[in-house]
Length: 90
Image (cartoon, rainbow, N blue to C red; front, side, top):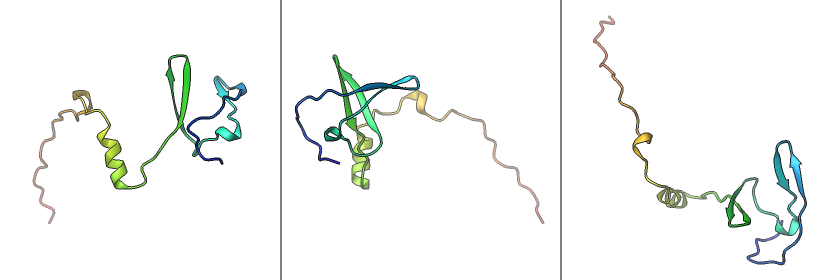
């Protein structure tokens, strides 16, 4: 695998079908680490970038800080939960 380069000359790549999805054959010089990518559009461009995973607790907490706060729909619902009745087990 080659190191990630910030800029390089464009190179044509082959598009093909994989079941109902369109796929692209990425040339070896553009190979990305891992087995997952993030993909999004910027205007007419399609941007593909490697998924980075935290390698320690500090990175994980920093990643969580970037998440939007939970909304009311994310809270646990109220449930009626009566306390257990005493029971003689002897």
